[in-house]
Image (tube, rainbow, N blue to C red; front, side, top):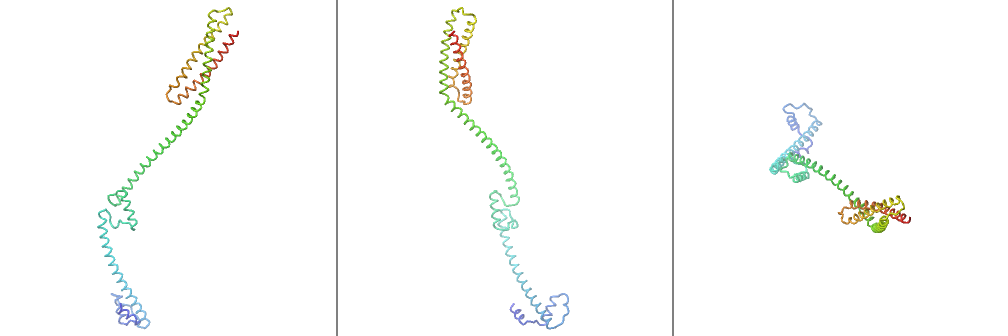
Length: 280
């Protein structure tokens, strides 16, 4: 390169060098004809120097490429020896180290025996199938949870209503007990009147057949009322032995309340009728 540099410094090449260079450049043909003038010599000298620089640069590039090819070939052989046990080729590797790391993590997560593309495809297909199954199971669980929540809300609402009803019944217990005592007292009054009517009916007077029939009817009604009072009293006493069914207890209590209300009215009517008859 130094000899050529010294030659380039002279500025012009000899006609002999230029002729040899043109013959080599146009071989196997003959170079074109040219006039040997100073201007032509200057131009040809510049072209020859440029050609020599390009040639030398090409030689350097070829040498570097040869060395790089050998180096990359050795690296490829080493990578092939490393990747063959896991079922990979150097051409299968990602373009970056980060992608290779992610690919390795995916293979480890999926428990793949190797890193063939077929293994990844099979694993992805299997995970997709399992994902659909898990989605269906999740949907079923969501439906069950919604049904259970509705049942729980319904049970809580029924419990609140029952507690409110029980609170009302507990608050009314004292009043109901007082009413029961009144009904029993009225029943005893009715029984006394019945005994009085029976004594009077033992020897019928001459007040007339109509009064006798009315008294017999009243006596029958009083006996019927007395039996109803005894029956309802027995039913009321048996409520304590009922099973712990709140709804059944509530229904029985409502029925007893209605019956006792009607019985109270009947007793009051019977007592009033008894007093009216006695006054006559």
